[in-house]
Image (cartoon, rainbow, N blue to C red):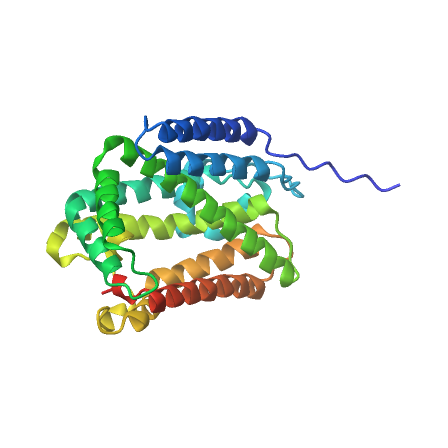
Amino acid sequence: MPASEPRAPRPVKLRPVAIAIAVIGIVVLLGGIVKFIPGGISTGAVLFLGGLILFLLSLIPLPVPREPEEPLSFFEKATGIFYEPARIFRNLRAHPHWFGAFAVVVVLSLVYSFAFVQRITPERIVDHTVEKVSQMGPPFTPPPETIEKMRTDQLSALKNPVERAGGTAKTIVGIFVLGAIAAALCLLFVLVFGGRINFWQALAVVFYSWLPVVAIQKILGLVILYLKAPEDLHPIRNQDTTLQDNLSLLVSGADHPVLFVALSFIGLTWFYFLWLRASGLHYGGTKVSGGAGWGVSIILYILLLLFAVISTSLFPGFVS
């Protein structure tokens, strides 16, 4: 009789963390309802949702390694992803440890966001955002009293330490949920192309594909942020990075917003990211050919491009 397949373990260590996040979310939500914690309603709801999603994901089995291979240390993976990504992704196939890359992406994003707000000033960011909202055509234009409330709430969110802490928590949950959605889409499209990949393998590929790109964008973006005058930076477009390595430099965002956004997807870091994700799916999955990895990576790229173009066509003022 053939030997039975080993039973796939589940990441049960995530469940206490998920429960703790959900409980904290409920406490913060109640604090917001009784007006004890500023901004607590939205922060608590996001934390509870993040804890619930993490708990549900902990029910998904981990992959069973087929070949014995020692896991690489986080330092080896964080540095090796820049110069030997194939080796890193092969190791992630057997040991899909994703948290280290996720933590680096979160820290770099939060550091850049904090520096951007301090450099541009909350007043300028809010004034620009509120002005663009007031310029939206019907039926999207809110009434004047809603716009003024929006101005007050956004200024408080950028200045109040408690609300800024809540914004940090929402950013962390948002990055994880975005990564989980990307991993689920990678899993789906890999199956369509005839390959196999576990969800946790896909999640590790997603975050380790993001790590080098985010590091380049945020670190160089910080340098440019302090080299350029604040008035030369856009309060909305530069919120992710000030690095401009794409073809959007050829057109004006004010005159051609849709074309500007479309051309911003044609750049060096985008090509680098596409190649990293394709390589990650190829080496991190099972029976995933190089062509299938590229196919999945390009499909996700096109979906994101279409979403950005449609959003810009609906609200072109935010790009100008």
